[in-house]
Each structure stands twice: as structure tokens, then as C-alpha cells.
Image (cartoon, rainbow over all chains, first blue to last red; front, side):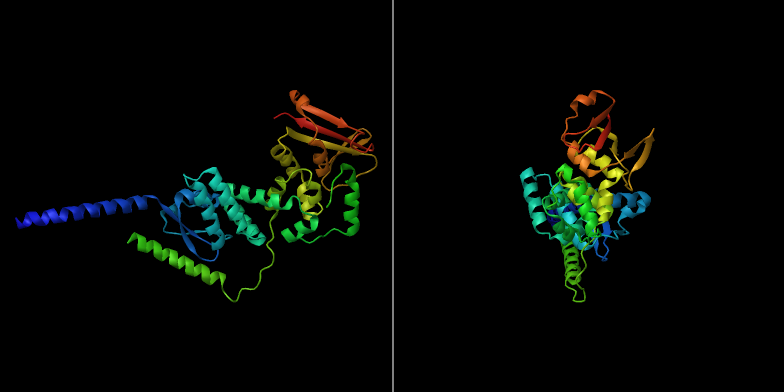
Length: 184
Length: 158
């Protein structure tokens, strides 16, 4: 009698443990990749997202052993701040329930939070990582920012110095005047 | 267990981040410089009427915009026009350009000249009539363009 009662007590416990194990296994099945940024912060990133980065793909092609998550994949030109933003963007765009409206709102907010320097850094990081979607989005938004601005604004935006002599610049303007080009 | 592990990771990440961003020894950084590839991609996404303005920014940006690769990709990708074989830009007198490929025909001097201004002017023209032919030659003189400049555009069907 005593044995029977013990077994009945342990059964639900066992089933709960099994379920918990199952849950753990399903969590582990979503394999993760270790990414190490330039400031030596390691990120565990879902493989489904990380495989969208061209740089990671290339790295895995060269050394497929790295996918066993024992070694971190180094990203030399990406700081942790930028990687967090990139991951945030990709998690939102991978989210199944996200409608077009949500994505638009998210993109607007995403842009608002960045100042110009951060935007450029993020663009460089996206270029290095070879992430198409984000890269297209950033270049488009930068083009939208500068398309109606005058030359001086764009020079400061890009951090560029004018290396034309005033005569060369004037000659260029004169040469193209017939096409009705407006140099604001 | 799994949750606590996750929390630890998160906390460690946060601490590292905070330390990194609030480190007192960091001095204000110089403006970020974009590399040529990135500038190339940004210029590709600009409308044709503002492109000439952007080649005046810098000699480097002028090089990018007037490069052959940029002009051909801009023509096909951004404007969605048939593949561009070349633009012959003929002008009375000599015309110097580092990007020009010289092509001599008899006594006349023709030059391959890819200039942004041409794109600005010619994207307005309709190309539908000429799409039937495999290649087409378009020559304009007079109306929009000053008379001493003669432009010829070769187009190839996809």
C-alpha cells in the first residue's frame, strides 16, 4: 500500500520533469551562434537571424566548425551598440505578426532615435555585415534626408571638405548651366 | 534554470554596455567617414535631377558619380532603362576628361563621356519607340542642348 501511494505521488512529478525537459530541448533546438563584436562583447544570436548576415555566412563557409557555438565569430568592424540595433531591426522584421503598418511605424521610430553620426556608423556596420534589407533601408533614408538639402549641408553631413578651387567650381557650374541644374 | 541563465547574460551585456558608453576617458570622436562603396549606394538612390549637385561636393564624389560603373548601374537600376552601351559626347574643340575613352572616327574626335547632366536631361525622353530595335542610336541637337554639343546615346535591349 505504502509503495503504491509513493508511486502515485512521484508520477505527476515525473511527468512535469519530462515536460520541462522537452521544453528545454525545444529551446535548445533553436541553435544559437556566438558573435563577438569589436569591443569584445559576445552575443548569442539565433541562427535564423545570424544566417542573414552575409559576413557570418562567409565565415561559416570558410570554417564550418564554428557553428557548434564553441567559438565566437569575430565581427571586427561592428561595435556592440550597432549590433544591438541591427538585431532589434531584424527581430522586428522577422516577427510573423508584424503588419506593414507596424513595420512602418517601427522604421520611423528607429530613424528618429538615431542622430546622423549614429546613422552613418550603423550604415558602415550594415555594409560590413552585408545585411541587404537594413542596408537598403538606411541608404534610402539617407538619400531622402539629403536630396533636398544644399551642398554645404551635405558636406557637413558626410564630413567632407571641399577640395575644389573656387574657379574650378565656378567652371563646373557654368558648364552645366544649360541643363537647368539648380545648385542650391 | 534556463531563465536565470538568460537573465545573467542580459545583465552582463548591460553592464558591459554601460561601462563602454560612459567610460570617462573617451574623447569626442571625429565625424564618421563613409567609404566609397557606401557613398556609391547612397548616390544610386538619389533622383536624377539632384545628382549634378552632388558631384560638386568633392573631387571624390565627382569621381564616383562620373565613373562608368555608376552611370551604367544608375541607368539600368534606378531609372529602369535599357542597358546603356555608351554615350558619345561630341563637342567642337577639344574636351578633356579623365574618364573619357577616346574613339577616333575619321577626322572627327568622339569621346565616351558619361556625365550626370546627360542623365538628367535624357531620362525625360521616351524610349518606348526605340525598344523594338536591338540597338538604337539617338542624336539630339539644338532644342535643349546648346548647338555646339552633339549627343549620341547607344542603347541595347536587355
